[in-house]
Length: 553
Image 1 (cartoon, one colour):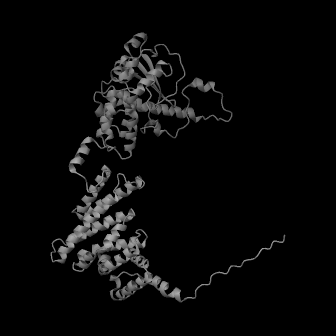
Image 2 (cartoon, rainbow, N blue to C red; image 1 turned 90 degrees about the vertical axis):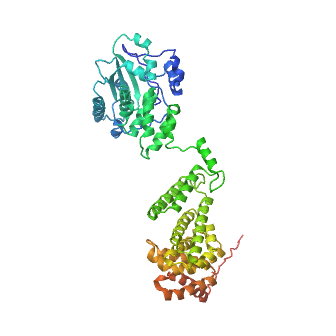
Image 3 (tube, rainbow, N blue to C red; image 1 turned 180 degrees about the vertical axis):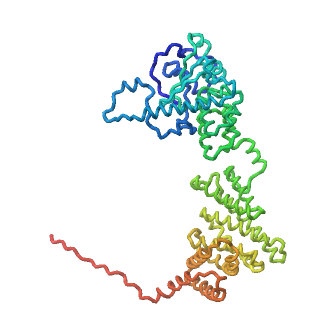
C-alpha cells in the first residue's frame, strides 16, 4: 500500500485538510508504519486522507471485482484534465472501447456495492444519505471511484486513523455538511467498502463467517491500514478457527508476517503453519529422555517421522498398514526432495537402520520359535519380513542400503532355519532377498565382491525354494525384474563363480520349470564370456602408418 506522493490540490469547500503539525498524543501506541505515515503527512508529502502505508506486497489478496475483469487492460485515466493536457503520442492509436470498458467496470462496481448494501440488516445506517455527515470517496489506482455516505462518529469510534484525522477540532473547522473526505490510490475499492461496512456491524465474527479466507485476508489488510482494531482482531479470530486450503498457508503466513501483528494475536494463527519448539515441548523431550536415534541434533521433524515409522511397523490391520506405508514413503520422498538431500528434519541413516535391526531381531526370535515347533506366532514372520522389505525400499531409494546387504548376507542361522518353516509363512523373507538382487543388478547397491558372493551363498537356495510361492501369492510381482536382477548379480562375480552358480541353476530349472526363476539371458552372457570369445581369433591391433615429413629447407 506504499503510494507515491499525489499532486497538490486545492481542497474544495468543506473538504478535509489535516496537515496538523501536532499529532495526537496517543500516536506512540500506533504501529511503526503508522508513525512514519504521520511524519510524511505533516511534511505535506501525502494526501491527507490516504491510509498509513504498510510494508506489504501489492499482490491482490482476494479474487474480487478487479480480478474478474483482469483481461480488461485499457481504461480511461481518472484525471480527465491530465489526460487532455498530455500531448498524444505519434504512434498511439485511440481505442474507442476504452471509455466503454471503464464505464462497464464502474457500473459493475456500483452493482457489487449495491449488493453489499442490500445485504445489511434492517436499521443499518451504512451509506444512509439522510443521517450521514461524511461523504467518503474511495478512488482506486486504475481509475475507479465510489462515494459512500458514512458517519463521523462511527469512523472515529472504530478506527484510530480516522479518530486522528476527524478530530473534534477538525470537525468544528468544517462549516458545511456533509464533510467531503477522499481516500485515494486504494488497492481494492470493494474490500475497502466491506471493511467500512464491518464498522456498522454488531457481530463482526458472524459477518466474517460468510466470507472465504482470501476475502478475510483483504479485509485484514485494510483494517490494519486504517487501524481498525476490532476488524483486525475479528479477522485473526476467523483465520485461527476457520479451515484453510493448503494453498492458503503461504498467503496467510506472508501477510501476517508483513503486517507485524504479533501483539494482536497473529502468533496463534501462525502456529497453524509454523512449528516452533516452545519451552513446554523442550521440557517434555527432556522428561522422556533421549530418543532411539541418539544425538542432540535430532530435530522435531525427525522425531515425528521416527514415530510414524514405528507405528506403521507395529500396526495390526494389514490393509491400513499398506495404505500408511504408501503415505509415509511419499512423505519421506517429498521431505527429502524439498530439502535437497539435507539431513536436518529428515530421517537419518541411523534411525532407519535402528528400525531395520528391530525388525530383524523379531524375525530371528519368531523363526527360532517356529523351528522349535511353536506355531503360535508363525504369521508374525511374514509381517516382520514385509516390514524389512519396506524399510529396505527406503534405504535403496536413498542409496544407503549397502550395510543392510552385508548384514543380510551373514544371516546363516536364519537361512538354515528357513526350511523348517512352512513356505506359506516364510516366502515373504525371500522377497527381501529378491529386492537385494534387483538393487545389485540395477547398480543401486554397490558392495564388495565378497559381500555379493556371501549374499548368493547364504540366500540363493532359500530363494529358489520360495520362488514358486512368490510368483503365485504376491500380487503385482514383477518376476522379470527379479530374474534380471538375479542374473546381473551373478554376472558381477568372477567367471568361475558364475559357472558354478549357473550350471546348478540349469539343472534346477529343467526339473522345476515355472517354480524356478528363468535366468537364461544371464546364462547366455556367461557362455559367451567363457567360451565363445575365447575360441575366436584374437583381434590384431591396428597398424599405424607413419609418414615421415622431410624438411626440404
